Image (cartoon, rainbow, N blue to C red):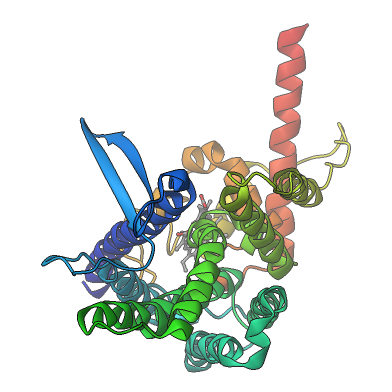
Length: 404
Ligand code: HEC
């Protein structure tokens, strides 16, 4: 019953996290777009620029003020709750998915022998320390040098990504880098960006000059947030891609993908400018191509026609002991309410039809059995690899037969 309820709590939280995240990042992309497409040649008497748009069956006309209107309107819309709720639902999801079953989802005995409590403490500390480091950096004298600050922020997350990969399971390491970046982004909204906007609004109301330093800080933080978006969104979907977090150099894979995301984001930010570097996008795509090439699977050894390969019946007893506790219609494994991702491994036909997936998760990324909870041995992994090689060979024979 507990596992069943946990499944619903996780579904609802994930749904809410996704919706609020879309609303937040969507609004932030939209305002960024507005800023970049403002017709500045239409600037006049306090107006910095305007633009026309058509959407959803109507025309919209927007104007941006150079500083502020003389008088505040009765109704002024703020954009902050999306950000706060994204963090709140995200952190709750982290608790339900990772901290609740930390022994399974965060600890991987091949990486480090931790207790659940230690793993959770490391995870939470990574969020807090990231904010303290980042915020300290932005408040220090170094922050005047924008490029250096950017490099130091990247270096911090590179270090975090490497450190976490030395202690936590690949999935948990990735998600915590993402959660740390997300925490920094939301804290930027809460501690810096919104207070600066409040000051601006109060200044108009009190007919005084707004504090210019607050505006400068808020602009820097919101620029950083802009560059964080693509890396953080990749991390949020990364748990579907075992080739990334399951790789022995998973932290480096993450850094390269983050750089690609930052590059693409930068290109979107500068492409409307007359003078801009045309190399940003090609360079980012080249980096991505290099990563895809570097992660390619090793070529298969030439199959030996005289070799005897294990049949599916031969591997069933291994799967029975190592996998079926989770991957059956009604799992026995504590905390698992339904077969994960619908994968069933208790019948030969089901195993045959998912051969490639099984081969991948058991021998390539080795992410199954989850955290190796059922302690699958290397011999057993080799058996699965040979079974798969045999299947590939019979498939090739069939293909050549049918071509003749
Ligand atoms: C402790 C429970 C547990 C055990 C034991 C376990 N799995 Fe899984 N398995 C999971 C969970 C949870 C997921 C879903 C992971 C996710 O959400 O990405 C999963 C996902 C999978 C997937 C789908 C991967 C994908 O991304 O499509 C395959 C295939 C799989 N497991 C195979 C196996 C095999 C083979 C074994 C035994 C060698 C095994 N599992 C043992 C819990 C388990």
